[in-house]
Image (cartoon, rainbow, N blue to C red; front, side, top):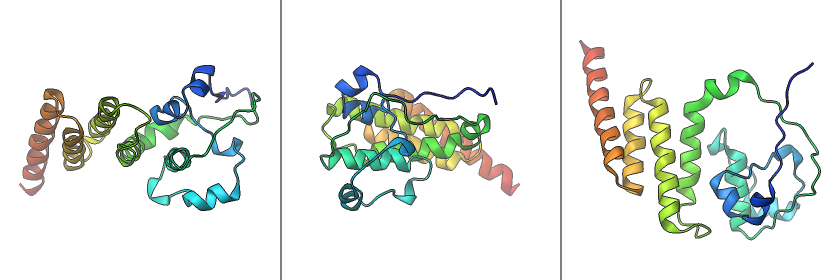
Length: 175
């Protein structure tokens, strides 16, 4: 068909820095290219449907935290096709789910605490920015979560803006 496929293979750095690279999202494990033991699947409980859009990343993090070792064969065994509308259509929900995953693993000491807090707060902030126009109350909640993880003037300003926008939206809809 002439369509370009994305090659998803870990770099040497991703492999060397595992599981840190998995946590940071640098190392993306494509589910269709994985073989794993049934005992691992049973131990971690498989995919969690509460993490729609990021159920694979969430499960891989649980696998890594349970002590599972990941290996790369050095061969690309599948191709990943990106659909042009997929990301734009689901950007907000994907960002919210990603922030939830990072929040769930905020206590994982594979990365120093300050870096974990920064990454998680940024994930909540990004999610809030993505949903701000459509759902300002949800955006305010995201900024509030970011603030609880890592306080900064920028996050506080986003929270205030979302709060004011939510008030304006409520007043406009009731008028």
